[in-house]
Image 1 (cartoon, rainbow, N blue to C red):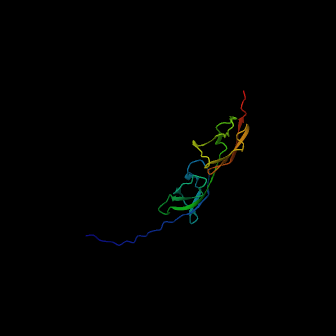
Image 2: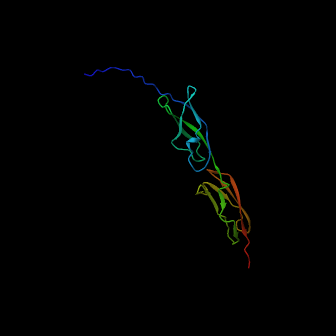
Image 3: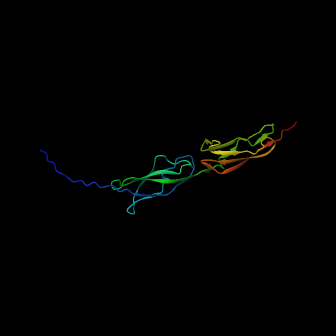
Length: 173
């Protein structure tokens, strides 16, 4: 018949590495941050452990994102267990200087207020006034003369740019 031999099996607790991760910094580019931007070390007993880094949950993308969770997966998972930590995120707004322009720069006086249309496109996406930028027009946008519109970045966009347009006098012919 069968014999049952008792055995003692020793279960070793896997060691959890201690993580040190730098603040993740980037300039807003419209995309989620890639895991190669995670710069950190994983150590156990002052010995550095090899492994890979990844994001857990929401991947930072916007200037408003200030924290995220990263996971370290050790190469040797028989000895070490994965560990995670919260990391600071610093995504700088993209300067809108090279993103904005005016649709028209010349108008002819017609007794009406005339605002030059703002064109703001980033990575093929048209930005939204109010969300991505604000505009400030001079008080007089009716009479002939040079006008300056001030465009100020918001949210994922920063910086200020002044663009000029002209309202020409009406030719009386």
